[in-house]
Length: 266
Ligand SMILES: Nc1ncnc2c1ncn2[C@@H]1O[C@H](COP(=O)(O)OP(=O)(O)O)[C@@H](O)[C@H]1O
Ligand SMILES: [Mg+2]
Image 1 (cartoon, rainbow, N blue to C red):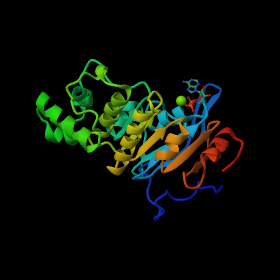
Image 2 (image 1 turned 135 degrees about the vertical axis):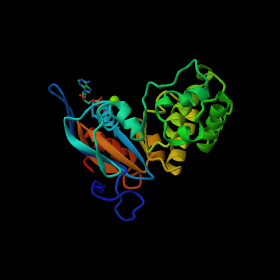
Image 3 (image 1 turned 180 degrees about the vertical axis):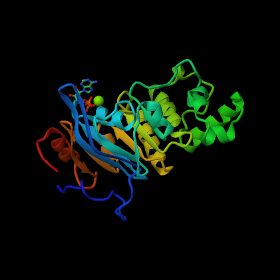
Image 4 (image 1 turned 30 degrees about the horizontal axis):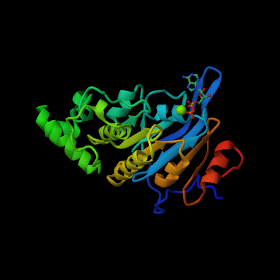
């Protein structure tokens, strides 16, 4: 196994600026160390998986990157510029969209309304440019176009209340919502955890579509086959630190689990 910690990403080209970068983040909760000097790089055009055992610091890392927690130490850079998020709205306004495990969809609202939920505050981007007047017909057309662009074919009727959709379709709505309106980075927390095989595959395809559309994705997942299927690089957390960053080409699933559990180093 080779350590890829210091190397540039999978594309293998010249070193690029990460679109999102964390340097030496520290986050403690009283005497519990959540993050112990963690760095992470997300490059343009990639899916970066974050894996690790329970308590390894995955959620804390993601929360620091998305404004849900404020790190005690360390820095975060977006497009090479330092950022300091005090709340999730700050990260969102900067273009970092997060789909948390407990999906932030509103069951009683239809698909189109869910895509537009909370967008009133965001005047820039597609919404502001295309819909100075918020009309239902326009929103539905645009929602349909967004879903088509992301290759979400199972959701043609955007007037259906989300509560009538399957788990995978709901996840697709949440992801489509995160991807719409000019976001720079999408963070997905265990998007396939509650889904069956077919629906998981659709969500994984959606992740690829996002990447191919130019939106890099951070994917937190426990599912090794899913991670190895879709990730370009894999950040492994262990005991509050980054144990390694590997690729599906450089390491096997067994290697990854061994690094995760401390049975091996990268
Ligand atoms: N709000 C909190 N208060 C106290 N301890 C916390 C809090 N959030 C996380 N921790 C602790 O920080 C460590 C990392 O947790 P977490 O980031 O949730 O790990 P993971 O998501 O990898 O399971 C764990 O020991 C956890 O108990
Ligand atoms: Mg967690």
